[in-house]
Image 1: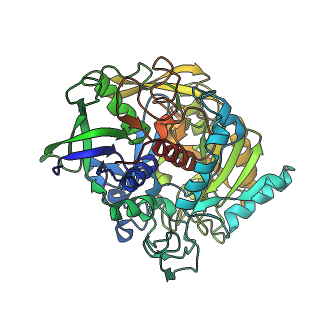
Image 2 (image 1 turned 90 degrees about the vertical axis):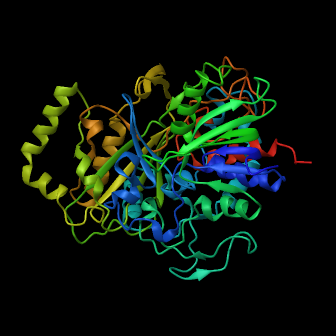
Image 3 (image 1 turned 135 degrees about the horizontal axis):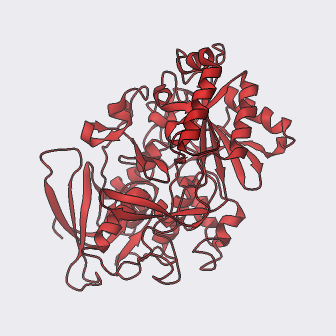
Length: 523
């Protein structure tokens, strides 16, 4: 085959795309992976999130970082960009969902999912280098104290995380893959996991799945975005596809390239895959299910910043998420930290309010500030914001869904079924207030889109290309194969077909492992 012909082209390099790349290369296929973001090395990551050019993905401003913020009418979304996808910017946590996850949503009944996925969860944990966090620092100890005071001390635990602990700042030969992986350096618990690990301790996908796949012949083209997928010959794609992509980091020279492939795997996450599928359904892939963009879930999250005035306390020490408190059967609370000097979020924060229309919320925010103007001024202007603040990530299994559709200026959101995702969850606000008292007089803040516009935020957007028994009930079948087309698959967060209620990276990896196990060896 020529350099423009492949067995598989994978669109996106997050958890699903990286799993697919390795497993297909192991089976003898010629594989190309196309990634919109940049290919970062450890020394390329920013020291703090004030370095917006290396932290945020805003190509129009020439910012080519690892984190993207996207806003719709009903939700604000944080996602990852770059070779390694969300693993570059996520908080390393690898929890298993509760049993209810496997028995709800559009995939319910297609398989006994809890049993079927068990072996794949095990493989995913091994590949991602999961380890129990050995360092419970101040932010974690306060969460444990909260759990004890609420009479649920036994529902607190350290997290399983994708981090190499070893010995701090000491480099070791590959500890995971019998010498086939890269050298690793022991974690120094600096708390800067979410601005990109500069110390080679985070087990991001470029250190495992992608590294091994490159050794087995994978070709990666970074800084390019796929804009077209078209069947060659037969309209069902059985003769293969042409895939067209263009430069994503150039404003003027957006050179387009077309390659041919026998099969295609969409792995661009909800924002990448669903957006592209909605576009293609109106052009070259009309037989895609009408369910594309449906059953989008926000994991029912709340992100609350707790800021305090105690300069003696250091909340940056530890890993990004070192512990979790299971506040009830469907709710989970995690303290999230940034490294020293990362205070960008302070520019977007306002006090928490929970009720009323737009004008009522503005009035409540103003009233809170006017009642304690000096205190709020001091909190927002603390010298090292990350040292004196922590983000409380609240997640629930409770289900609510959105739909994404193609609008005049991109995708737009709408409510389909279930209750609308809420910007303020009273239970989360109560836990945050309790936590603030333990810190020592801390006050709660949220991103202004939550308090002002009543728009919830999530770091774990899921769904939009879910499983079903047929194309009237889902976009893919139980093996991640797209209804209506041959040799076409989806492996990313858009396939998650129920609300996990916990950080979803491990589940995306496990489901993708299963999907790839169904593809035969290349004879």
